[in-house]
Image (tube, rainbow, N blue to C red; front, top):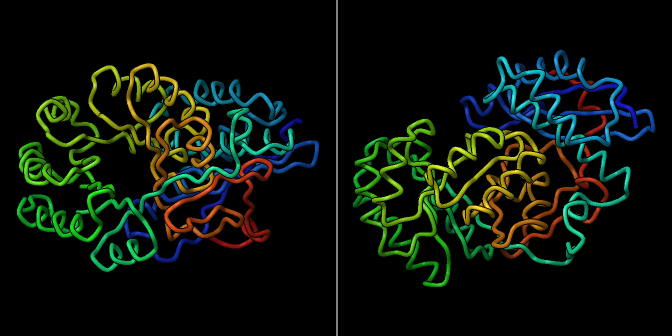
Length: 349
């Protein structure tokens, strides 16, 4: 199964955030092979990621055996090592790696979840959580049957009053009940002292985790935070490759690791992260886990599965599993079980 073409496209995403998540947003990768099979993956990096894929990575992969996924992942990392150990280049590699896994599943007529585990149960319902940005969305999530909700508290600013966030959490707990899970996401906007004050205020409400309160490169801050916070700390959404997650694990900076499979290096890297975390006794909860590219790993590899709601603005994929009554099931279709509009690569960005 020789790779004959490799291309990428950033699709339109109406309603996406007016920041880097659009400017350097998600890209679709297409790999075609000599057997006629076509694999699709989703990476990141916008136009810059597309350029990396259609120059450096394409030149490296054309003519290679698409079945040799792990070796091709190593080759892409080696080819870009001088300038791409983190960030945009790894986001681009992620999309290519996922397209290769899609091809592997299609060639073997198995779902990716089945490739990862012989014991995969296609009927297993996986619990989900809904990330919400305001009170109206929180109520809608509860009405839809979600028993786990993540409150995105960026709206409270860089130096929030802990009493304001405490009131939000208290009301959410009252409405959800004692058996539901509540998480918070600060979007890396706080400093250490603010985080500790907020953590102390919300600790009585049985918070599952407080996500990425500090900038991802504030390793010293996280080292102190993880020791002093009464609430478990989660992060890693903006970390890259297994080596980056190994550093987080070695320093014990997070109780929960949150790799994004479309950014961190693809499924090959996500599998490595699960293996590292299992040995260290650290939980993995992938970012946007309900999306079709992370869900197979959660279904097949995760001893404590919990899948986050998908990006609502990324709508160019068809066939993705849907959340129903707060649960989701991984696809049993070959590969990742998704396709893209046939005219995606013919339309202007």
